[in-house]
Image 1 (cartoon, rainbow, N blue to C red):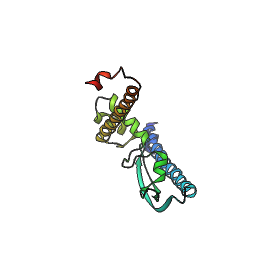
Image 2 (image 1 turned 180 degrees about the horizontal axis):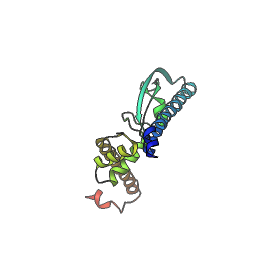
Image 3 (image 1 turned 60 degrees about the horizontal axis):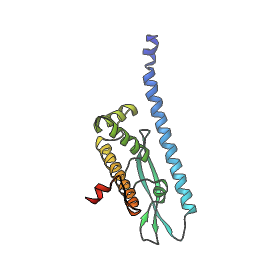
Image 4 (image 1 turned 135 degrees about the vertical axis):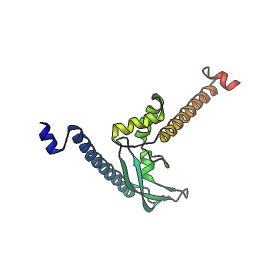
Length: 176
């Protein structure tokens, strides 16, 4: 059997990684096509009196699968506000500046807060996906943003409760 494997030059591990790479390429292409179909649907169904299509721009987003997806979407002028917007990004809830998908951000935060370090979390993702997909600094930034969002939500909840007569869980924090 060893002679046959050496003659073919393949092992089960080689087969797994080769098929994963093929799957990744197919996944990226499918996501790209789906996003561009959605973008076309938005173009046809938008409020034409409010949103004027300006051009198409490319964006790349790193996904939870471990592959980056590059796609084109339309850039619109919102004539009511004078702002330029990507309606596809808004529809899907894609953050403006981030190049990391919301699902990958969620996984990164979970690994970042449960792991021994951001570096080890990044290495874990790299090992499980067969290549680097996110840096330890990106994980740290995602954890910080998630912490800020949780703190803001907690403060908002406490403010609503305080307005109704007092928040016992944080009364001492707010009264000094």
